Length: 117
Image (cartoon, rainbow, N blue to C red; front, top):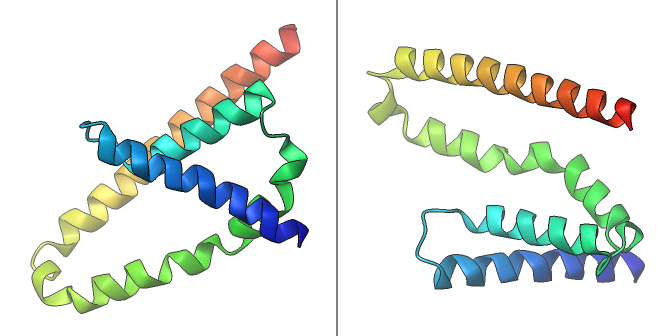
């Protein structure tokens, strides 16, 4: 029952993100709205971390399963992609490296700031 409530809370925040995407005419995905809302409610204390921790942990654990439909979609679209697969692979590898470097640098920066405090 506890996990059901936690998952329901995460689902409610996600739904609010979907509503905001519909109401605000910006090219921002609903998931980003949902993440920002979750950050705000967690930081303000409206929702305590313990109220969503177990369900969030479960969702993170099963995240790799969520990529299976995308991979199948690529296989289904192979005819359209086969002529441009080399640029796609290059772009994917390059952007992955860039994201890893930027994420690492930001993490190091935040750790340094936390150590100063």
